[in-house]
Length: 308
Image (tube, rainbow, N blue to C red; front, side, top):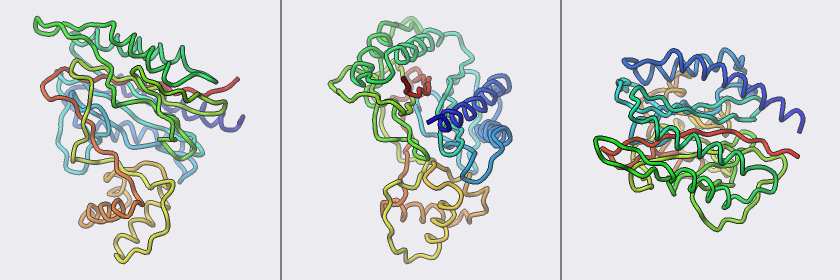
């Protein structure tokens, strides 16, 4: 346990330094690819990337406005950050598979300040209620009560800030970003408890819409399943891609840009990923989006290590 804790502390310090640099450096006018590479190159350098021992925990999420999570630019994406945007910057660092999953929100217009305050307060509430033997459903109820006590006025209309009921925090296992336990952010009956030695990402999502998100057809995040069975592959390209995934990511999440960086052929990669997904070897994390045209969803995760 002591070694695990030291690995988390090292990864957390790298995340803190990269996060601090990103906050100072990211400006409107930069492309999503420029922002992602700034964060990822900084992470690789500071953590002293070394195969599966140390490196990036998962692809850099740069979800804009009505998109809540799981967006990172694929090759050719020309999206530019604008002053009117609200961007959720979500990135991970790992040391020996112990992953730090944390994020922050960037906005350049003070009209969203109260939405930021609501989610920050809700995150702090989650931290206060979390710990060994904490009941997950009770954490969700406390987060919702805090979040929905806030309102936001936009263009003369008042919105209640709502917790997104179908998004949640989660436990984190070594080399597995979603560890199996979910930490809700709305009231519910889940009596599951946090246990000593577990690691959790406490994630709070606030919105001014209906409080629900949908999965998009677009996808940029993938990961080899922890429970993937050996399946004979007929396609040589699929075999080659799976070998690349095993050697470079194991069960850590990755994106198409990372495959491009490793020299994988762009032509055919998408088909091979579909094949591996259909065979339940690789899972995909679809982009989560909220009602278009409504004010943004804000996300502020914190990592908690349960100890007595």
